[in-house]
Length: 207
Image (tube, rainbow, N blue to C red; front, side, top):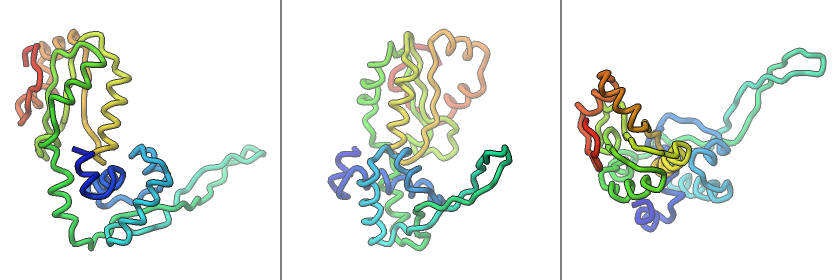
């Protein structure tokens, strides 16, 4: 879906940037921090920021941060560091309409997600809710359960999804044994998820 939107709006990097600010409309953020969050090269990001500034969506700002510096004599000095940043123009008239389009994650191919996750272990349960179903009350967006899971690679993959979506994804990754233990102990976090709107993309374990 990101590639298709990239063709419509000019680039996938622009879509990532727009999604971030539509999800964080009050954010005042440094460009270097955006580079890390969106996993976009700095030169490309600055170009896309300029493009969105010309549309009236974004506004350049100076971000100030107080940093503590340790001097040679051991004393601590506070210094104000200024850096280039950007924020969303609160008067941008298309933000609501763009949010409806770019923040609607219901059209994501869940089978493709599952196929990717299967590369990192034996998946027994994969379920989505929260932002994937436009459920604002949901406290959890995604559950992955399985055996011999490479949790680091799964987390890296999901953080990449966050960069694509421009928003945080609340997820848990459990080995089957831990998941079964939590369910037998009536883990409220999991029980609340399964009581809320959700889709079981794969369910080889009881819920």
